[in-house]
Image (cartoon, helix red, strand yellow):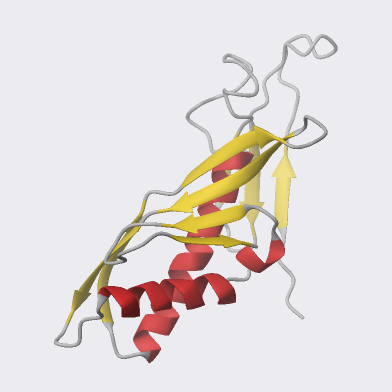
Length: 163
């Protein structure tokens, strides 16, 4: 069993805490030594109490889904003999209210564009199958209830998966 750790740190740096007029800026530190500046999303907490230059939890959630799909796709493509030279995804998450009116990230759309080198090139159907398998094997996708859609690239049709 593997464990994954993150250390978050926030310190009140002035402002009026009780009525909510304080900075939401904080840091995320990971075991590899990276520290990331984080904040609430400006769409949730207005500036100046949030910082749009920082990563917010919603962006990090979308990035985690996209990154897991990317890494799983690269592994599967390599096993199939496809030389991936470049992979770019412009992932977008959508927040909507659930049945109780509580906002949640209900859908994430991945738009991978993959460039291949070498002589062996996948057909659109083969690439779509790689994306399908990557989605089914992605640890993050298997851990959430958010709908994940995969569109673009060589794929001839949109893949939509509810996890």
